[in-house]
Length: 330
Length: 279
Image 1 (tube, rainbow over the protein chains, first blue to last red):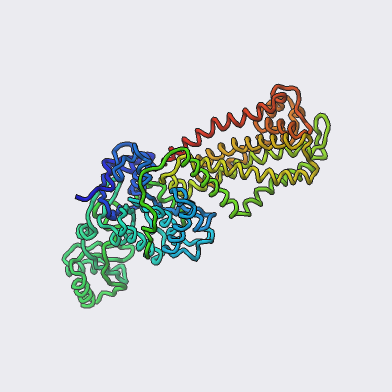
Image 2: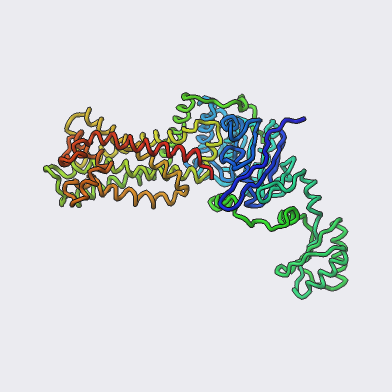
């Protein structure tokens, strides 16, 4: 049996009138990447704050690397690293100064701290900007510096709270590469994300979080098959054709399609997307219905949550911090 | 990309503790704060412009209409007041930096690291003291240029500077607590100024309390700022040594007691707030 890196049981935490964590259970095996997937306000950030000893829960227990987060916070802190939603680096210092500072705090000698800083600056593509003040860094550079700071002394468990929110695709890929490289060195990662794709690419196992608890858990593939298959989507030119189109799509795909009048859109869940697309295209042409757009797509995160939770996304203000920080980042 | 995970750095293990670790972490944080200051020269410029402006405006514009009880040059009377006032306003800079750190998640990162809990706050306080030394150096030069000087020799003058720095330490802890309570750095200024300005006006910084009407005089005399100002006027040998009230007679005692009492109250509050920064 593989050892357990994180073990949480029945975590509850209230902010104002709502339970940000409402009985969250979580088990993360050592050496794996575990994704916490959920909408804004689902309680992901609160869970990370509880597990990294930053906040105390009202009830429930959690152990990280075998140490209780409430009773032995020092032992937990000695083994973890946290990269939060907002790059926690010093604006007024250079990239190099930031890393040397953290190295010193981790007990490295000045010389070792400088050497480690140079290594990390090179690995994260920041060598050129090393002497510049972080003020002038792009969002992606900050996030990379932040990750580098988490890796100065290799943590046993790395907590990544929405590590790529607000990043461009290139920076996102760089962050993902860095995470993979870290995992190959044996570090366990708990990753929170709003992006299905991110969880899909990085996580061995995904816990879907909603309203402060885990509502589904499994591999990306397992979750996707629970969520359903691909969609065929038709956008009609005239709103008046919506009902005729919906009837036609329903007949061809043999399901009840969803109709969104505002965007003049008809969506049907299908098994074989290529066959369905061909059939729908043919039927539309035969019926002479003018179409603006026609295509297939994967289920969206919204649909995942609709399916798993029966509710809409973004309906609470849970972490409050979530929104605040994104606001500050923007 | 290779992160160079091995790189001769041992993986994380058990927590390190002890006063030596706390001190070394505190010093690292001090260096961090000083490096920040060195990287933002505009902050230093803005920072020094206010006290120098006060010296010029009060010393030359209002100064001609000011009276120093017992006689003496108003600018000689004024400078010790400006020294203390600058320490008081330093509270705002402290609060702003602390609030900036906590709003940016830097505090979260430090709190999730295996470092001494006290390091961030102690480092801030030490850096404030170093900053206070810098401020005093600039103000002393400014004072010498406008005709202020110390009359009782360098020993007493250094003692006076020590009292000024003691006040700075007290203001630093109040500033740290404020910064932790007000997580938005932009609101700090709007809170600190209305707090600091009446404290300055209702003290012996600009006007001798004996010249204030009725009940205002005693209020100004017991103001912590006045205690330091009166004590350092005496140590520097500058004019305007208060009246015959108890507070005026025991200015040096109060100049030590007030800051010590303020630190005793605000430092534990700040540490508690820092440790319990849960939401």
